[in-house]
Length: 331
Image (cartoon, rainbow, N blue to C red; front, side, top):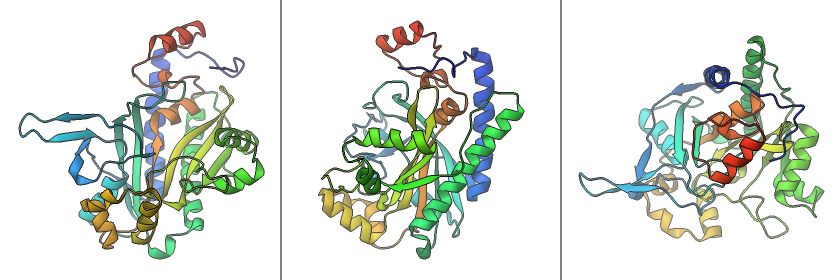
């Protein structure tokens, strides 16, 4: 963990807790207003058979348990992309309105470092769109509204007397293939760093499909985002001098893109699930959605060096020892 000590100032626990609450409350209100969202309750776990579990990159192991009452196996959600779309349909939301919820998850295979934890907390949101909205321009407009909510929250934090960071609202949009063309000798993470160091706020589009080098920019499961209409929102984290992902989002699959992406990955067994059958039958509304890290946002705006400074989680001994040496206090 490399810290720019001139950018990093220690905060006592009670002060941090006060600001964490302030940031979460403020951002939630701004996000709901900017995207026209209503808060709903969401499940912590789903059944395997429902098909509502999200596979993220497609390789993560789920945390599961059996229920004493009937022996059914339930899985802790990894995100709520599929559940949200089903909820919009069942709850009867109209076009251009949506929902958001607090999502908590256990991702047992996530690496534990300054940016990652096995405990995940995020705002999961989803919004109904029209067929004419399934394009890059609509995706970009939505990204800008999220960045505006981040900037508004940061401005509100400044009014509380906190020495805030600069949030660049001028988002640099680039596709993963364009980024590869610009820096063909760099890894995907190195390309991200170069872009975000220069532009500060970056949205990398079209993640999941193989690029000209035969590799995807990053892995994506084939059955929630349309790989041509998705992306990651990155900010520059000055304390760690790194690329900092705040959100993964996108316009969701329709029958055509689901078929193409399942053919590309060979995950044909998924097409038997209720959710996937509903997509193929054009039963579900067309949507856009994503997840925005709650601890991530607090870490960014409060200029923290480790995500454990803004959330309580499990950390291995090596992490605890390193943080102690660097005078980084974990919750």
